[in-house]
Image 1 (cartoon, rainbow, N blue to C red):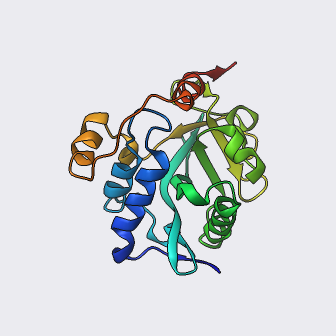
Image 2: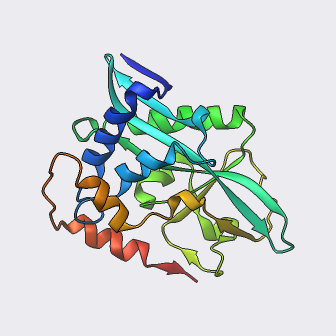
Length: 211
């Protein structure tokens, strides 16, 4: 039986542990995502109403968290939007459709709160089936004018971006360092860092831009 609910304080350590297991060695040897989860909840851009856990038969197996971000158009007008991440499912339950269910549920809740656009960074293979498209298609770029291959956009409400050119601005909470994350990781049960092929795939994607 699957249930989705808001995260509670007693879930914090469980969620951070799941996040650590899901991301460890995936993109780099080790990971930083569990540290981001650890500090995100206390930031002003964090949205508790969009912090969800998924339970399978009473056990937490997944989580998705949102923070505020913003877009500015060429005249400097700001638009508040969403970004999510980390989103994860415990490794033994990945590739079973649970992540899809969790994301779709969160999209509906985001719309009910008045949000109409999500911008994320990740592997397109994981998100295009959920309605995300290349940032280039919506003319959403970074502050430097570049269009990262890993940046994707979803209009929760059709027409929300009005065909304008937009510049994306992340929440400051996302600007964590590997050193900070490592210091936190050192306080936890040791996991072995490994070099895996998925890390090279991530490096190529995260350093690629669209013309």
